Image 1 (cartoon, rainbow, N blue to C red):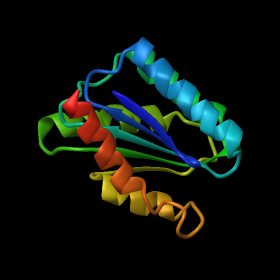
Image 2 (tube, rainbow, N blue to C red):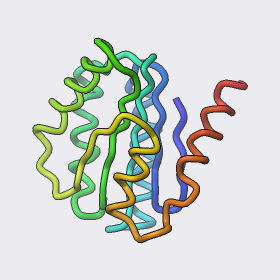
Image 3 (cartoon, rainbow, N blue to C red):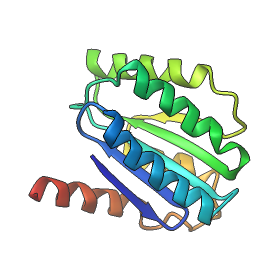
Length: 146
């Protein structure tokens, strides 16, 4: 898992099954971004086609994390990579998570980091996401090199 902050955007890249310990890193990073950029903070969660779906405990924590930021979170996009059965299961799990959310935060599901960038761009000042796609690519390359 990789978690990073780029200005008013928090990015979490999941390459394995989410665990409570890894989830806490994500929750802490998002809370920091929201605290520094209330009302402008954005969240991009990238779920690799290799990552297994989370257990119920992490699903419930995800719901609480997003809902807890209320209007301080300007948008949240979930990039679900891959196609076929695994991606369909992941989308189903995440759709279930968001169906119970009671938050004014716009929430979207897309298939690629570029599409996530474009979706977040609709909820952010023009030009404020310039390096996002490249930053995600660099983070992934660094993770693979380790």
